[in-house]
Length: 232
Image (cartoon, rainbow, N blue to C red):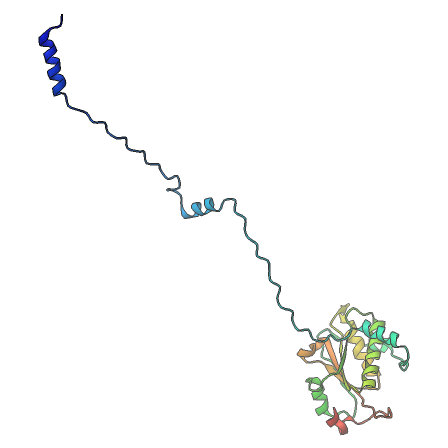
């Protein structure tokens, strides 16, 4: 049998007990794993696996090209193809031409009697404009000789009094072989009145400007170019 007094006390204690309200759970804050990384490390992580984009290069616009002077082999092939008008046979001595070796940087200068100093100075400074040219680079001695003779024949036939020969400065045993040969050959050719190393804009010491004897319409050489310098 239940004790009425004990039952009453239990009810009283239950009535006076504080009501505990449930507290809502606070969500856990998630920590940023990148918070302690430096800028360099963040950049490296962000670009991991990225491939560089290669830009397709844009080709530069084509440059205007100047007419190229024919090389020695072009002149030789042209002469062989024409075939009709044969060049006068001119005996040139390579032995004589190569007797006096020319240094690569030597300045060439030669004029015959009768050529005025003023006209020679104009040749040396490039004031007498050349009308035809040949490049001897890569030629053998024989090819260079034939190319020089062919150039002079064509120039005189076309009425050009000044031509340019690019001999370069290539050395054989310390001697500029083609430059030495050109210097010696031109001195042996009577149509050549004078020659001199070209100014820098025309090749400098690697080229030579040549003044040729003028011809009348009948083909007779003019022996005194200084009297006709106004026609250069």
